[in-house]
Length: 169
Image (cartoon, rainbow, N blue to C red; front, side, top):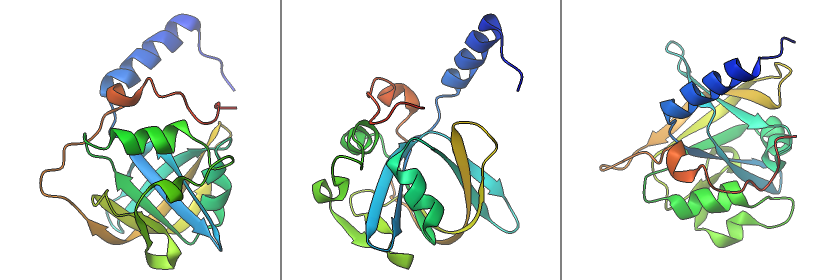
């Protein structure tokens, strides 16, 4: 693995932060265990067939659940969803049941759907890939989607000060 020089790393971090990615909450269920986390690494990964990919930290409680789940729900946070970002980004499922603090219902494969976050894509997991970093890529095929009319994405800049429920390692 090539190490980035400090100057290069600073430039990289500045460029990525400037992109100000939209934030999402990914939820999953494996049998009876539910989990969900705030995610900033995600993208559409294929046009035909449609695919969406998310990268989840190996240190995160959600990682193990999502890697075994048949479906993931990708909730696109609206600018008004800061409280959801704080809950799913600042707390860990190792210590609390986040779903006891939100309104949710089961979706395809039992995946928890956050009722107050209607802009979402539900995917059937088709691939999990570990590229050797601290996050693992989970790619899915969309099986359902919904959106709110006045959606304004919640951006990284608005949540960057949330203390994460887990360190990256």
